[in-house]
Image (cartoon, rainbow over all chains, first blue to last red; front, side, top):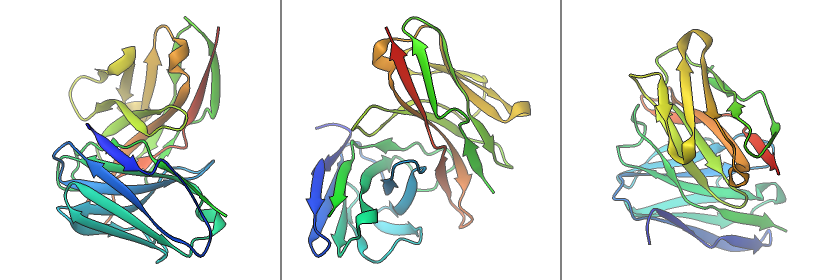
Length: 116
Length: 116
């Protein structure tokens, strides 16, 4: 595997379910990100991790819970979601410490989440 | 406030025709600019980036972009479009998050359709 991978690619869940999204980067990067992409809205940054430490949390509801056990893996744990949470969730990684002015982010293919 | 504007929501061009996608940014400091492309159901792929130096930057897939500070623009161009270029294109700028770090601010995207 190369680049940034995400599993599953598609997920359908009920509002009472608990599920997790997984992201893995094979680039040796130090920072990882979660974004939400909804129809007709710009990409929204959700969480940023730098060397496994969370450095940004952009007012995301507590029903989304990130976890970064090491610099190669990032999870997004989901529970009691709402239908408006249906979106494409994108993971990204960057080589520098997160938030560097010249840092470049590389994205995974995304997980298409549908909440019923 | 920092922002990125892509004024064209949807553009249709004929295969073999030239292409220009517009991007304007609002940012007080020297910007670090990106163009990403997203094919249907996929993540974002980096096309090119500008940090400093030559204001005309070359990217992958035959794309180029020109940074014009006086116009706060970073337009993407391609001399001859191929059917496989049909996708959504996102302009982004690295902006100060206000917490001593930087984060990507994206435009809303321009969807490109290519007709034979």
